[in-house]
Length: 614
Image (cartoon, rainbow, N blue to C red):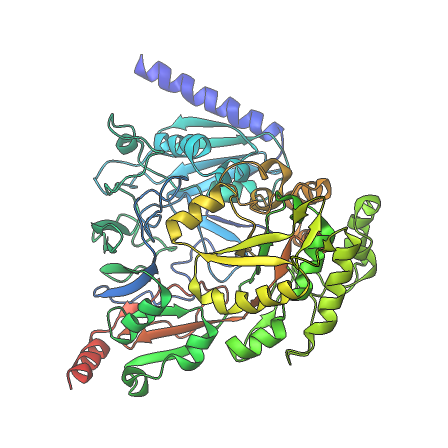
């Protein structure tokens, strides 16, 4: 009977594969795939070029975090997850840091898909294991996907909206079927699903959408070793990790322990770094980088400062409007207030002139729009001409500029006042605040980092000069996140990170369907049919050239609707670290600045320790 059933199953699988092939040519089995073109690394690659495959294992690295945490589940809206709590898990595929968007097998040994990418099948490695020793199977994959879609952050529901069904074909084989063809990115991002242990989360006393401080088992290079809520969390390298020698992991995850120490604010954290309480810091404050490292450990070389160039897209950091507020629903109001931000003066005063003004949602990449639309980009936009701002076609987008003297803002403020007058916001001479239909033009700028206060204060003063009353409030990370999830704010400082291959995530950023969904990344409340249509075009771009044209068109429409007041970016990381580490000579061009390819250098660490005792 077993032989008969096995034979029938084999026949069914053959017919299933034949049916799939009728829909289009089957590609695979594949070891890796690029979004467009061919992957850089061949089937016989042993490690990525930017790692040291012989890096020694051992030691620890201590890093900092700001605020607090009360959960070890990073995939739900509730609570503040501990930094790094997602790295105990793996995904079916893994990406390289020296390609725009290529994926290689990790939990999945190989995979295949049809020519129009309407389905993808993964073949799992039979040796894959959870930290508790139990095997990782297709049941875990399906459960993780379903749970994230039903109980995870809204991002997952938009990112994977085109998945129609998930089919377990055997314990080590699983197929995802889509309700759309031609979404080239979808098979790749299915491979990014964080895979969690079904057997752990389905225990009677556990609920996935509830915060927890009980360390769950993962399948990744590290497990949670010590939890001190709000103070620190420690990750310990899994010595017998089943995936350690896979090409995508070789030469990485070299520290025995990763220690994250929490501080209440950046100033306290910086002093702790100089005192040697932790080892590595990626500096985000320009003034601190210029003036805050005059310390003995820096002068004698125990602390190293260096700039690390990279080619990662910088996205956009900006003052972001909540267009759900009636006064920010008016595009002219949003346009007017941008004239009150004097970036050039602030950059000189607070950043020693080191920042570059951003003028794109895709800064520092080929995806950013510039000049006037022409060629294929213009052709894409022409389809929407009747419902787009005329400036999309007639002007190059540039944020308002000044000469940086502090006096050059006067002309910009006059222009802002004219726009507000034209929008019906008249100045009340008694209060000094503009009003319309009985409502005053006043709002709050919500911050989570005190480092932004010095940038915001002059902006508020300039707003007051044109009759707009703005205030500033700094709250802790828990309160901040709760207010963002509930869209309970007027204006915030927001970073819109972007990849070199934008796609399905754009839905969660800007699509109308996400504007009212609690916890979505469409924090500005954008509801724009042209943007919805352009997102769909980006997702279904057939090749790299078309992706670039469509993304530039989307960028241009976002910019000319004035949903934000752009701020700044830089094209390098500011790294500071105690000189205890080794690292590859050449970092990847799309590096994240996270030291996952570094290793503990015992000789260097001994010298630092000896020098510190003197």
